[in-house]
Image 1 (cartoon, rainbow, N blue to C red):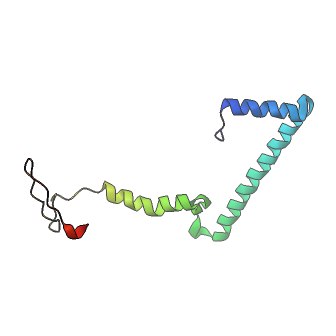
Image 2: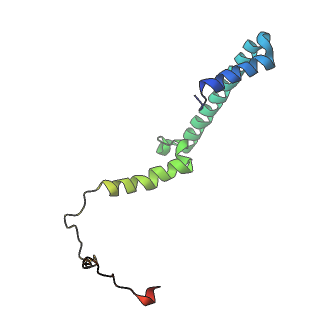
Image 3: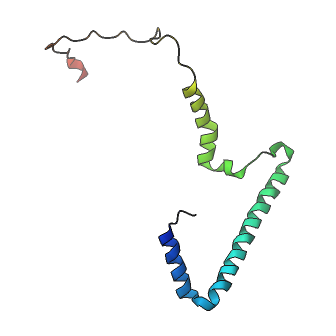
Length: 117
């Protein structure tokens, strides 16, 4: 729940008891619950108004898709996953591959290119 452990929740309860006192804590909790419920209802109404304003063409529209992380995952990474899951070619060495270098013998020094360094 919100990334909080039992220790953090317990600390919040103790702090709430100290701040509000045991007499006013139930009233404060009820008011917080009402406020959260109203915020959730406002968000749902805004989402429904947006869908109604966009029309029937966008009936499957989800505002969470506008989040950049979700947008990239949905539109870019799905295509990459399809490419990764595709079957590999039957020919392990395509025609454009460079020829394999010869293996060195024991104690043989590899070639050194003075122009490359």
